[in-house]
Image (cartoon, rainbow, N blue to C red):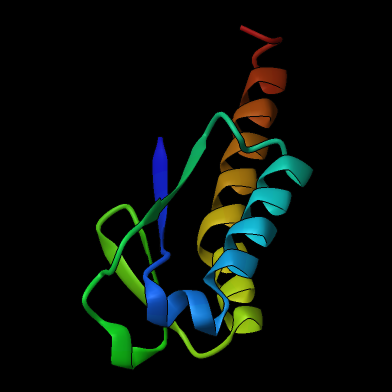
Length: 98
């Protein structure tokens, strides 16, 4: 399971981290990924001056805006997860559902 952690410390909160969490959660539901991606909050990631901070597992990510965070989340989390699920379904179909 992949864990996505969003900073909810003061600086990131002011910049829009709550909006990021809401939108990430909506995307996980839209794509049926709630059981594959764990979304959580974390107080201060100690990168306050860099932008909106979050991470994918242990990979730190900094976004300059809520919109950028959403695009990055789709590119790095949603698409690979949905591509992986589609590939597994295709392999199962190729093998008669084995």
